[in-house]
Image 1 (cartoon, rainbow, N blue to C red):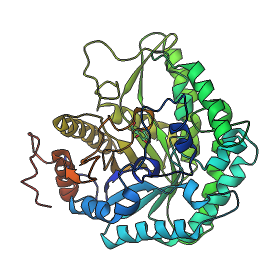
Image 2: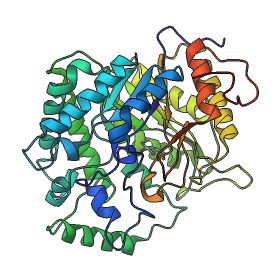
Image 3: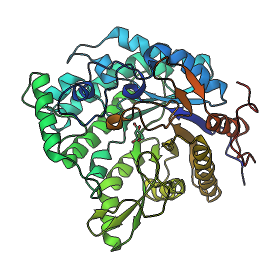
Length: 421
Ligand code: BGC
């Protein structure tokens, strides 16, 4: 079988802080501009998607993709606590309208790692009012945008801090992290700086699960009628030592959030690689295996394993692959990655697993958090000096599959000439 079900969503994703540029009111902007910082470079103009969203959405549609996943930025929508910006909300209405204009279903993430600086100055997710504040922001945004939204998710990878706790193969420079936190607090005139990446992962998880349910209810009470889910980072966890260690990791990192997704309208699955779990935590890549620019193993088969895992835990809710991709300068490896990942999706579908969409990370080469602009995840390259976009062969490849809604027989990476845009 090489056919995908009718109505399958085919898309590409971005996140506000990584592409819009000049997200100056966010906590991450603060962290990028203090000393010491873990960021190798600041985001600055990013892809200037804030101004170029129309041409980017048009480009996505012209490739044959029918879905655009992007995030709205809390730091723009609520620039000061209790003050909502109509101008920012209107901006996102224009983004949503552009999606509809080009026949693209908008999938909106309400939180993709960045918070307003006032929220960080207050202490962030670990502080009591956090869930209330987030739910209220979602309510406001959904009230203004809901009639144009196709799908929504509350959080992008809220389980990432738990996942990071298992990393034992990378040296995290803890003194620098602590100093960065102190400097950031000083920069925002506070004695604390609570951001998604810093702090107590277990506390954060508890607060965010509560916030997810409240925010979802708030969105549901507003205009429009759209599925609301959550996007979970899910990697293929393989035991190399005692199996109970691997099982413990899955319980801690994935299962609570998969339960939350099961009580929602869908689960967003975001998979990049496999991890080998040893006695003391992650072991890192196995010798001899091809690595991506992120230092992950090139392992597209992880997606199939993760879909099966999520299906077991989430029961009946539909699964959407909301991120899957590879950081590489060699675009033919991206084509290969997509081909093998999608073959796994087809095997899941053949077994009756309810997978309804594949959204590739990412539409554009963009700001990869602390690693800056070096890793290239985009289907489309962005010239950092001119902001010019250049479509890569992998974009044509994915677009051709999307258009036909089936795996094509292309064995070679297409050049683009086959698919005039
Ligand atoms: C995140 C993206 C990120 C991507 C690649 C996911 O964890 O949602 O923001 O760029 O992975 O690392």
